Length: 113
Image (cartoon, rainbow, N blue to C red):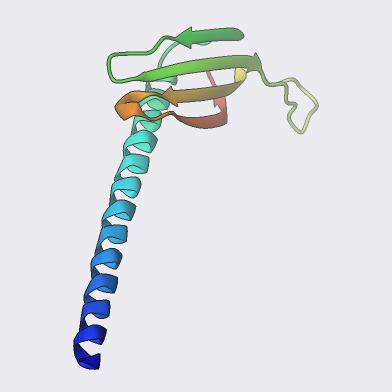
């Protein structure tokens, strides 16, 4: 009787562990999906001509919205000359698809001659 009880307990524990693994896999896939969408948008953003200011890309049919803030990044070289064409870009991506709300942010310096 004790052996049957231990066997049942082990079965329940392994079922729970498998369910948790499934949940973790889904979460990792979702994070990868969001990260890839952000990377794709940042690649697109680098190809357009930026000017200082802010703009918003409203939510698309997949549930993504972007808020972009662009400012001039001031830097000097070793000779003390101002470097032109540098922008500090901050992007906030909001995802409201699949009944969930997620936000990711990116901040980088972009050179556009």
